[in-house]
Length: 325
Image (cartoon, rainbow, N blue to C red; front, side, top):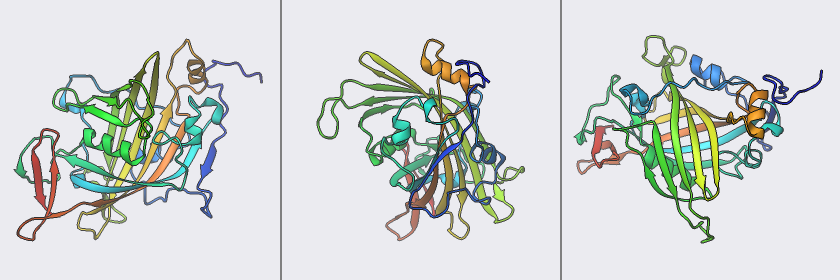
């Protein structure tokens, strides 16, 4: 059968997988590590269509991605890239950096581990002691987390400023990059506009308790799709990605240890006047690359003047939120 570029569904499924060369066996997520339907259909799948756009700028409270309350606080995160998957081969990648490395680092390879810090807080803006229960709303501190990941992965363009106002529009994040690289080489002006366009969450039980019946551990899965528009002198780069992460609160850890499996999916953008737009039609808009991680999260706990363990975090507006460990 003759291949005709630009015909929907014309891409051949090859499922090229690059594993850790130092691993004896290919990495496959264990059945117990991904138990939600959301995780199974978006992390364990070989082909993936993007989440349907569901968010409207300046709209309702539903535009924010709310995490399970067990993630409240500061965490030391170790993320290990386990494998890279190219469902339709490498010819469909929008950039060679996605073959040489990952969306997070141009040289990241399976087996590489990176350590960084992540913060989650309550958007109620309460200053002082707060009570976090199963009904509490917890969100990611996107400004801090964006900077933390940028530094940990030693990305070429260092962040100068992050603008994010979760009160007015949680669907948008603006990043201004420094004009000099770490080695003082000039990079020119660069800005990224991040638009969160879809998200979905699920707990492991239909009752909403998030308990894995087999291990009696709280499980929470979140998927979020975003569009990144990077503006540079004479050039604009548009990228669509989706991150799906299934968190599992480790039993017996007093709520201070979380394990997770995470996938970054990369999509082509449907520009009809470009080669990428033709390739997008070939793959029916499906993801052209997956980057699968195992994540280990250890809660950062502080001891107050009375020797009591405290879980504390600062909100973007400077409020200090704490709860007893």
